[in-house]
Image (cartoon, rainbow, N blue to C red; front, top):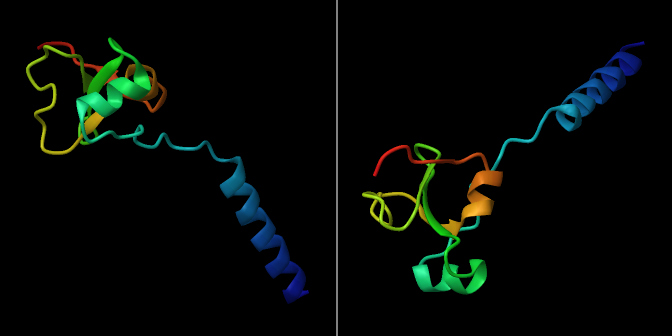
Length: 88
């Protein structure tokens, strides 16, 4: 009986892990704007900040300037749960 209970508990745990929604990971990170542009195409590159889950378009105050973050494609940032900055 104990073995059955252990098996049932293990199976329930596995189902819970597989059934739970996946959390968005950080988007693909490029170290330079040029490398991101080659992959994403011009006009689609943004700077993302993983600490705030915000991305910045070129010309924004913090574009390329936050301590953590990197260049990525706008669509990838949005798919990963990042939102556009509301200000500069």
